[in-house]
Image 1 (tube, rainbow, N blue to C red):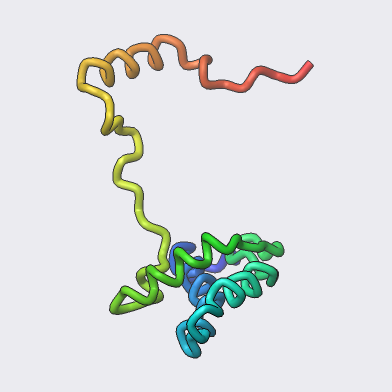
Image 2 (cartoon, rainbow, N blue to C red; image 1 turned 90 degrees about the horizontal axis):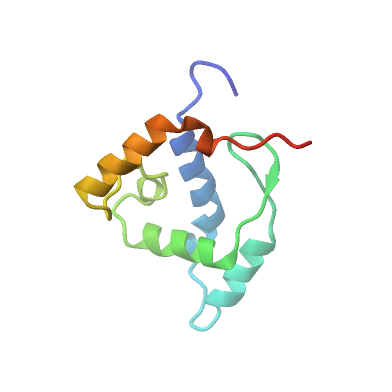
Length: 118
């Protein structure tokens, strides 16, 4: 998985999600049978796209993927991990509080470190 021509991890995740919900898109279940179909998919084990380990997903997660894919023009693109644009920002905190938090963090960087287990 370390070769230079590997697709980006976002694309690998999108393809895994599409592989899981693809049968529901190709042959939608009859009315009233969706929850049973989602439950059957949730019971299946898939291969993690980055580590190769076995992984399972819950019904609500698979359902969210299904609705995102069904409402999109390109279902695979809709299933990609979204790029976070708010990392390092505090959208719900006023500017003065943001500055105070940054100053405290700069003055006490050890506050975020995990204490060693003795």
